[in-house]
Amino acid sequence: MKFSFKKTSVLVSFIFLLVLHSFSQTEIHWGSTGDPLHGLVITWKSMEMSSQIKWGYTDSYEQGPFHGVSRNNYSGYLFDYAFPTVNASSTIHYSIFNDGSWTSDKTFQTSVSPSSTQFSFIAGGDSRTRMDDWQMAADKLAEETVDFHLFMGDHVNSGSSTTDWDNWFDRGSNFLEKNVIYHTGGNHEFGPIYLNKFVMPENEKWYSFEFGNALFICLSTEDYFGTQHIWLEDQLKNTTKTWKIVFFHKPFFTTGSHANDMTPDRNTWWKAFDDNGVDVVLGGHTHYYLRSKPINLNVSSTSAVAEYGSKPDQGRLQIVAGSYGAPVSSTGNAWFIEKNKSIIHYTKFEIDDNVLNMNAYDMYGNIFDHVTITKELTGIEDINPNTSVSSLLNDNFPNPFSTSTTISYSLLTSNYISLKIYNMSGQEIETLVEDFQSLGEHQIIWEPSGLKSGIYFYRLEVGAPFGSKRKHTETKRLIYQK
Image 1 (cartoon, rainbow, N blue to C red):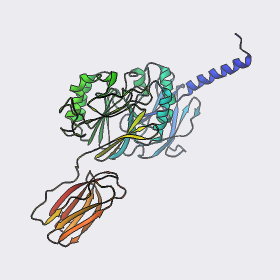
Image 2 (cartoon, rainbow, N blue to C red; image 1 turned 90 degrees about the vertical axis):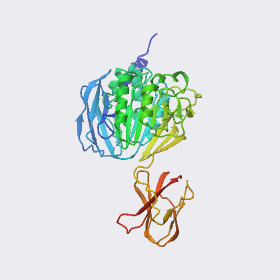
Image 3 (cartoon, rainbow, N blue to C red; image 1 turned 135 degrees about the vertical axis):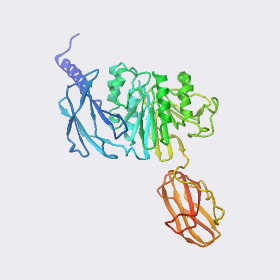
Image 4 (tube, rainbow, N blue to C red; image 1 turned 90 degrees about the horizontal axis):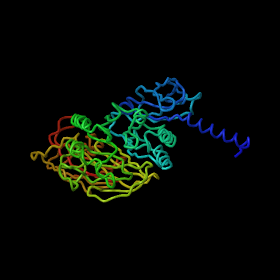
């Protein structure tokens, strides 16, 4: 078979472009050795032995160029640049000097302050096999603005295949270049390449980090179960954080061929979750969406408890979010299933002090499941009424309410009173009344403005001039639902 010179030239050019493309992939991705602001690291690939990054808070890259720290890769080198503590809620502009030229201007949005108790994150995983679906998922995830992502493993079909990894980075670049991701390894890719590719806290196989009022614990379902159990118990027992969130690849409660993968560890890992009031347990592995009913094996191993929460009689919320591109699995039936759907999806969590909201989305941005967990109030002291003080605070009506509610109270003597609204963490939201009032029945209509749905408290204080100690306090709860 003979080729014409023209056809041969075209073929050589095509091969050259393919080779050049494989060499020029920068594989830019973000990680952290701590929280998203403290320990922030960007990693990229280069065929050269030296590479640089320039960055700043404007496109003039005013922070100046810096050399990346190189390490070996299966092809060429990986370079890391560890940022100093960066400004919260800010845009970073950056460019990578790679294979002889600077990339176009790229942007990265930093997280809110790690001390903030209002933040958001996305959880999902299992992007292996179907690269078109992975690219669709990655492009959709790139449109979201959250503080960080949790990746539930099975990034690629074969962790030893360099082609799989090249395709994964290439198809997911739009997402990977813009977001901090905390990874856990799955059974398909856990190994040397996975551990070398990503920067994570501690030993990278399992680790923890804190953000806001939450503790995040990453476990590895691939090895070291006994060692991790000891470490897990220590992490859970010594935290003072409001929320405890654990993520790993293989879920405890699922259906199909993976139903019993984690059953042997129910008496160790899951018992630690129940004993220490873990709020959310995240996994992948089964390629569908599953939200569990409240599970507490200390109470029952065959039926759900009444509600989600961290009290001894409340149950864990387990989410299986395992479909960023892997072949979608069929749903099943089991006592622990509250919601089950065969769909490519992601889950978005928003924490606002003592309230956690989770929405499950398809890749078109439609919500198909939702759950809210509310912690009990910790910032307001609820004092029992002193019957020697002549007042009575009534239940608001209606409750729950969507637009307005009426709060009424009675005074048997004229007195100074204060009536205020507080959120779940005890922060004052609004003062409804602060005045000297005559005896008798009083009422006020409250119409919230600019507040999120959730549980709030109204508190009546009676009996002393403003600025001095009150003699009597009553507090009641109301529920606002937009």
